[in-house]
Image 1 (cartoon, each protein chain N blue to C red):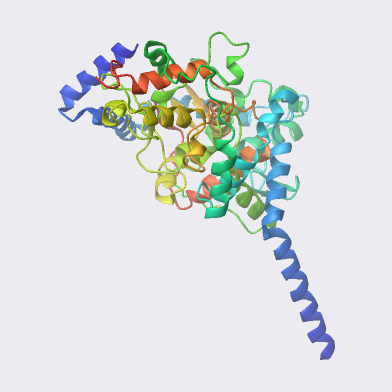
Image 2 (spheres, helix red, strand yellow):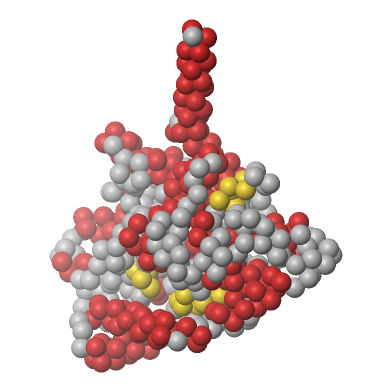
Amino acid sequence: MRIHYAIIALAAGLSLAAAYFLWRPEGRAVSVDDAIRESWTRAAPDWQVRLVQDETQKVCSTYRNAPPKPIADAVLARERAMIQYPADGKLMGDWRKGERLAQSGYGGRFTDYPPRQENGGNCYACHQLDKTELSFGTLGPSLLDYGKNRRYADAEIRAVYERIYNPHAAIPCANMPRMGASKFLTIEQIKDLVAYVMAPDSPVNR
Amino acid sequence: MRRALGTVAVALTLIGSTPLPAQDDATEREVERYRQMLKGDPWSNPGLLDADRGEALWKERRGPKNASLEQCDLGKGPGKVEGAFAELPRYFRDADRVMDLETRLVWCLERLQGFARADIIKRPYSKANQAGSELEALATYVANKSNGLKFAPQLEHPKAREALAVGEALFFRRQGPMDFSCSTCHAESGKRIRLQGLPFLGKPEAARKVIGEWPAYRVSQGTVMTMQHRIADCYWQMRLPLIDYGSPVTVALTMFLVNQAKGGDISAPQIKR
């Protein structure tokens, strides 16, 4: 009888251990990493690096974009430190160039290499901007009259530059890409986009 | 282009006399009307040509071993096609891993017919206005044989449950130069990219509506597209490299999506824009 209990206890212990092994969070992470490693076997090394997460991508994935306060604060600080500003201090460029960039979804896909044109900001994929452009996405907020509604204030211009350069510096685990921090767009291109959103004569504000 | 789109949108708006942002709904309604017409006359669905071709390929003796696929075990026993898709992906003991429909088809093409894996997956996705690839035709045939059934994910085996957990984590995994995850686009209702509506795949009610529509015939491409291709295209859009055909990631994500769609009707091949 005693032996039976021992066997039952042992079996229970083993199944608990097995369950823990299968469901522990680290075990799952290892499995995800294994799956990633085994799924892009033909990609060149300079493309493999795109699968490796940085710290912000890691925590935003783990917390499904809702990190607890201390981690959110760490994201804010780390991402803010990445923002680089134009050497001449001017945050607004040419809104006409910005408009083209906002329309263009070119760049970064493996079919976009070797590059045939400059990368676009693809703003219209997610945002409404110019009221005459009806083909706009809704993943991000509408930016219609964005500058006008903020009286074209300098602080707001700076905030827009920072939002485009690195949105996580304002909203930790934001959905929007870090266009400047990832070097997807250049500082000059970001200035043109800032002008498109914030210039009084831009169609976004007319 | 922009002006043309605008004109179309305005025209649609005038016809539908709906407020501006709703013109997308008008397009969606037209596609839905097309779908309903196809339901009324199912034989007019061009995707069924691929299903027919797939059936012929299934029965034909082919490959170095000059064998048909009629002994292929899709999970319900050798040669049993009816209802197999409703229970895929699943764990297969002979392969000791979880496989989705396409991965299992590759397995059978290799084992039963003797084709080399590299040749099978060389061109798995058809280009616009081409007939579906052999794999696409076979997948469409098998999926079509589960029409009217509901997804019933098979999660008894630990590896099947592991695939589900990995798939769920992958759905939320942010990566690449744009920091995208699947959930960037598919984690809310009623969102769209440009004018393209996006299903909220994190929500079972929404997943049940769309997952059973694949493989789907895409009107804009004039060809069928399987879930492997659909997911590969998402990763392309996420600026990641080309994912391997039948990779652990695509299979795990499919397991997650099918589990989200558990109990949802299968109506493949459905019509997509």
